[in-house]
Amino acid sequence: MRFDVLTIFPEALTGFLSVGVLGQAIEKGLISAHLHDLRDFTDDPHRVVDDRPYGGGPGMLLKVEPIVRGIEAIKAGTIESCFLHEQCEDNNQQANSASKCKTILLSSQGRLFSQNDALKWGKLDQLLLVCGRYEGVDERVVQFVDDEVSIGDYVLTGGEVAAAVIIEATARMLPGMVGRFESVTTDSFYEKDHLGPPQYTRPPEFRGLRVPEVLLSGDHARIERFRESRAWEKTMRNRPDLIGLERLPEQSQHLDRVGDDG
Ligand code: SAH
Image (tube, helix red, strand yellow):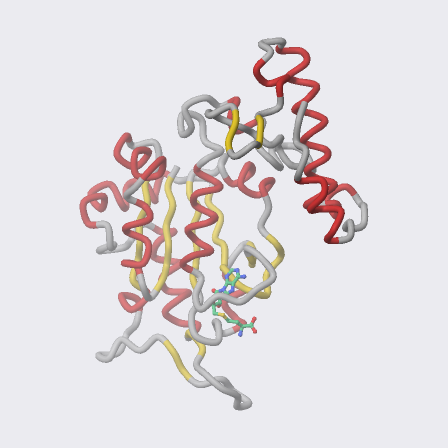
């Protein structure tokens, strides 16, 4: 799968894309990532990408023309350069052969991104992520994308972190990305509306806190039942909204955390 990011700070994502599961996936050729500098799609000598908002107000907005030019060039495969130079050889060829592509605008005013989106988008050939900055983008950009998406109810200074979140969550859904796919399917939110179970590793006791005995028992059926019930408990405690319940008062949440035995 191919990821493209259109941004004024392509360098913000290079470190992130070069480590861990994503770095390895890029090296193995499971995914490719192409970072495009929005300024490459300007047509003036100063490479201006922003302007003041009509009607007044503070700050600047990203202009519509460079963004739309960038989207069109990336989708058509007519880009001359991209920030991760070593991956650019196959740049245009891959873009042309990509039949299933979605263009997403990262926006604090978008609908909320979810695990289901990651799962669906993982089946695409190409995902093009457009990052805003400053006070955002000219609203007309929305007409040129397939979706306007937010990663949470808070405001960031730019879309790059949101793009990183979406790339990581989506790439994780691809076969071969994570050692055992089972570890993905048992995670929180994977085709379910509740959290995954709490987990433990060695040592068996830390400062008086013991790992639940059942997990040391080797009885897989019991372990499964235990994990299932703990997953629901944790959902009720931390995310009751997921299962249509009200949040517990703060104090009982704390009490629940103690006494985590089997
Ligand atoms: N004026 C806007 C905020 C702009 S923040 C408002 O009132 O909502 C600048 C840019 O950061 C946005 O264009 C978007 O690309 C990015 N951004 C900020 N918060 C985000 C979020 N929660 N999810 C995705 N992108 C976000």
